[in-house]
Length: 289
Image (cartoon, rainbow, N blue to C red; front, side, top):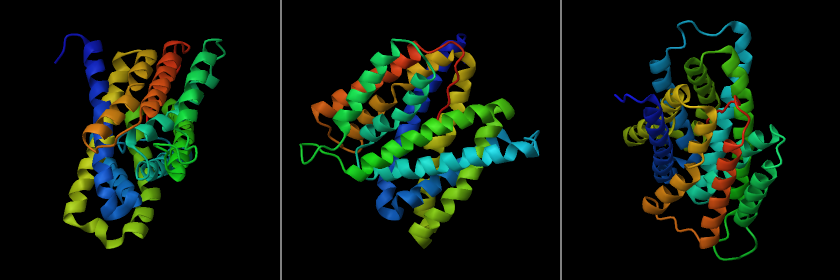
């Protein structure tokens, strides 16, 4: 479509970022019907179906010895999405995404020894401290929602580390599809236990298709295309836009109003993420969630 593959890669990653956050905003509208657990189950199930169709991992699939690490990869992915959805059920989307970025930021910064990394650590810590619920101050957040978002961040960091090991053993698309399938094994029973028969409503299933495609299938596929045409450093820089996009969509679609301090905190996290990407070692790997 485009003569310049780098331009297509930039457009692809921007569409992916908007798509995953649109999926999250749609998810928040389903929470009152089947809970965050049921919504996660729907997302993982329909994303699995889409990714299995696209990448067909049964053709030239992984060796038997690689299945345990794929299962771990899927378990981390499933639990990460469960706790992230639990967080956005309690706190604004943009803030949850900013808090969750603590995980990949830690992985990126701990893997480097440059003095400039202390600047990005300072920005990230300042942003996170602002977002922590301090008493009954204006705009104070649900403490449990904050905890869930931070746990999701830890799991995102683990997902990146394990994902790099999986990527060394299994083709990227097949790894994502199989990892998503394993995540479904963990999330669907939990979703059914919490939501019950409500999950099988035609309307809810239709929502699930939309969430699975928007939040997982489209972003994963486009991010893989983008990674083939742009350096990992540029990819990481582009991904730093996620908290801003999440905050704007939360404002426009969900009417989630943030305080000026919360906007400042999100900006600090974005600066930390972008800065760590720009100063990262060449050849470092990125993984997405």
